[in-house]
Length: 369
Image (tube, rainbow, N blue to C red):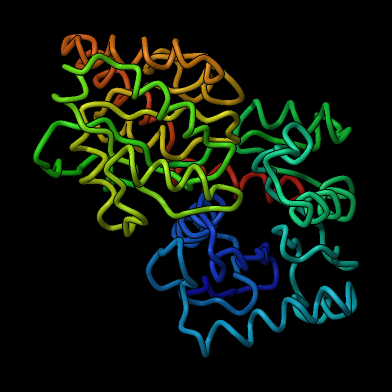
């Protein structure tokens, strides 16, 4: 449902929504909700989703938002754009005032302003947690898009500062606009399981630090481990074969949980644990806070900025700190209730409607309107 253009004076923005067609986690979540809320908030703007996406279907991180026969020609078009470059992109988005690129289309238009969103700089900060292909792709995206864009959005102030420092982006060209959390998490009814549980949600990959979490959990007192279960939800990622086997053996592993079932699972947790080594925004942390669940997370990257005083922060490199934090929270119902209450208040600051309104204002500034 593209907002139709009623007059040539309308600001026309074409957004590369290719991540909606791919297997993806955080960036797909951002793309899906951001564009839907841009459509709702648009007044004097014509927001279009490339490649010819008028409906995203249902959010599913494991597969395309469209059917296979709808997805394949669009992916083929994206690949053709990579080969043909700017002339074909100009023809595809003709009439647009701005083109907002994802890391899937790495060419800039010649007849429209260029913008993009910076999600994280982990390929620069932690290359050991990425494949060689990912590193090359991100560096090409930075060279061809980020460094020459007319304006950039950063999903947190920490990410903004990383982009300024690591990519040499001028501070005035990059604006922090926080992502949001959906109402389903604020309204979630807790799912009950056989035992109270601590929950991790996310892809199983090296950056998420699950081996350290499993080590810390194993070091808890036998009484705590009998009373509480450790539940892990999320798909298997890259470079995680040994970790994946440990997750299956040492926790209750649910695999990929459909988006519609996540709010209830999160809301039912006694504790949400997320000892990631780096995050650009940290959707799982915000979702847990919105669901009224106490959070233990890392004291690095954007996580202190996003969580504020609504989470217990630990050094993710310290098994003892993780174990101590988990023990402290599981043994203190009053502390869990206090953090849960703070989290609900804090999560209200991350609103997709606000994100969309601020993004539309950003587009107008870049376009000089």
